[in-house]
Length: 72
Image (cartoon, rainbow, N blue to C red):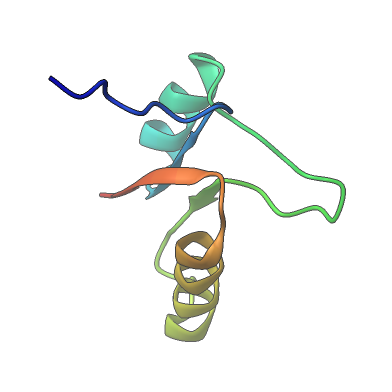
């Protein structure tokens, strides 16, 4: 039987949701910001543009350290 291969580094969860949902996830310690200022969370509200959502989603899908993207 073959052994399962696990990632050698920790992976992140990215969250795009309303302020209460994102705050709840941040309180668990899942928030991350890299040296360039990119973060793995976005508070979306009625003023968030489609272009902003598209850019954030694209950057998350191209990231090597994000394993799960939650959109609420």
